[in-house]
Length: 199
Length: 165
Image (cartoon, rainbow over all chains, first blue to last red; front, side, top):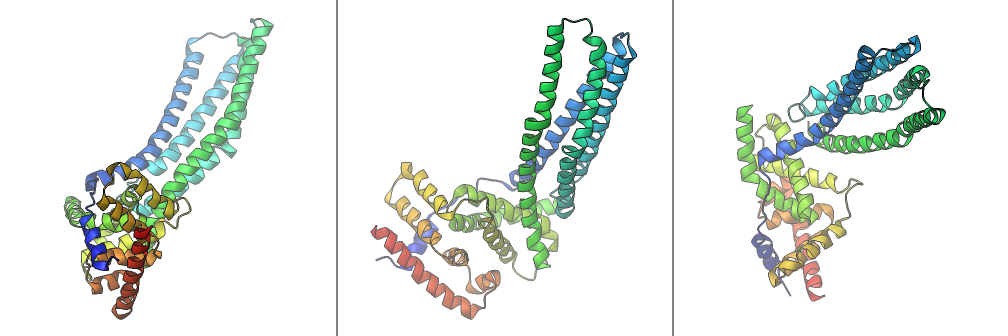
């Protein structure tokens, strides 16, 4: 039969080791936030590269039909507008340091999540429609001289890719991003709530 | 800002070990205890300016840690307590010794206590003065003494029960 004193000495003999330094601790939190920022930035970078590729196509290649220029213009404008929207969304979380202004950052994070949801739902369909229209106009000339089989193949692949992006890829991106942001918001809310209670 | 950094580092060095032990006692799991320690000191960092010296800074930090612990495991995404405690016992099999076994039993016994009791007893085990524990847990000192006596008996009984198995 053990007494409480034995339990206490056992507890005190169990030395625990804190494996994290205060600097590491703060930088770890900043890393979680930075992860969201860098994913958003990569997204923007991808869009900028697409913009540059389509712009180069329009500037450096000679096309015979106005439909191709119209199609490329629509695609370029759609990509540019969507990139700007993404950049505006990125700015929401990029200008605030969580460790310095936690409550302000939490509000921004919620606004960011809401914006992200709109971008990949309502706005996405405008973007996809503009891209489809642009591609149809471009294909009118660019596919005109190709074999019918090749024409069908390219059109089919484009449709398949657009549908894949609009369905499986878009949904899984939204789900993953929502989970990440939800976890972060939940954690930051727990941190803020305690001090709201104690004021 | 530099002063705040310096002060925070000092506070961390002085208090982190005890807070980590409290979190470890509460969760029975090193990773979760690390998460809780991080969350606690993040709150400390953010609210350092609000600390008004009405109590000891260690009391203030303990209070933050206790609240953090209580809300942490209630979150739906956390694992059940029992699973966590079983994990530490499994993880420690390679460094098996009688003492390690006793320590694992102690954590298992603590995990069988009520959430609030678990936190109170870890503070008792760390020899915090009763008036400080009363301040942290928001219980009057008189009631706390009775409560501690009851928890001590319960923990000893649980420990002995597990030791016999």
